[in-house]
Image: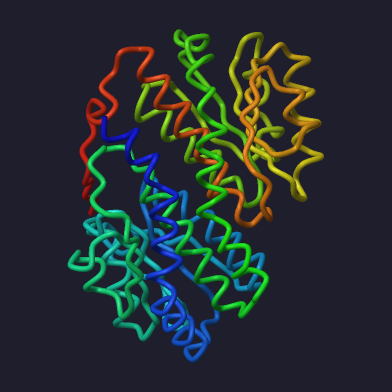
Length: 343
């Protein structure tokens, strides 16, 4: 089963990136400082789009740089590319094959923007279209559902942010990631023991906020891809503005909230969901929030900006276990292929 092996490979991939990717990341950071972009524009699809949400918070929150997500259809379908000439334009893709993401970078390059690709393949069209390329160094990913390439994307984004910030404390925190990610996987081993309880659910909500909004979206996507459950990822704040009305007794909700500025709001949300009779599944390193959930998925303590790399791992395993208890093919989900090309 490739998926299980690739989930287990994540600590090694992260360690390889930190060791072998540092020099190139530092060089790209120097080029970005020289260009001095007014803003950042990120083009991505699918799982990579969730990595882009993480980058929004990293560049915006830690570097105070405005970030927008690209609208690829403007470049391909409507052929009306926005002015990106003063931007750092980043294309994020596991395969580097999506034509619309490549077109965003090509258009931006012609306008004079600085372009960067983050992919797993040096020879991909996206990598070739960009001035700079930061490889994921993840090795070949055989399972259709992306796991190790997703956490590799987050790690590259974290490394680049750290290099741009020039922060020794951030670099030190990054250095602990291989050990902490291995610990996160060990802490997730118990999920298999209670996965059967959710075998017959056909809907699920995943909540996060801030840095872990990306985590909520990615867990929801993995659940959809692997176990065909109608799942939806929300910002905890947006969830209060309407979608919570759909929650009734027994409705499963995953809440992702490690230590950080959003913790108090998520504790309140968990209590409210419990009052509604929802089935709350909590991913956190805070004992108070974990104690409010029907199921607790503990992750190691780390600064909030790094927590999405750890917090997604229990979600990956939950999604895999749901596929297994339902007897689904985890490496080749129906209707999906490893490389999806959109134009």
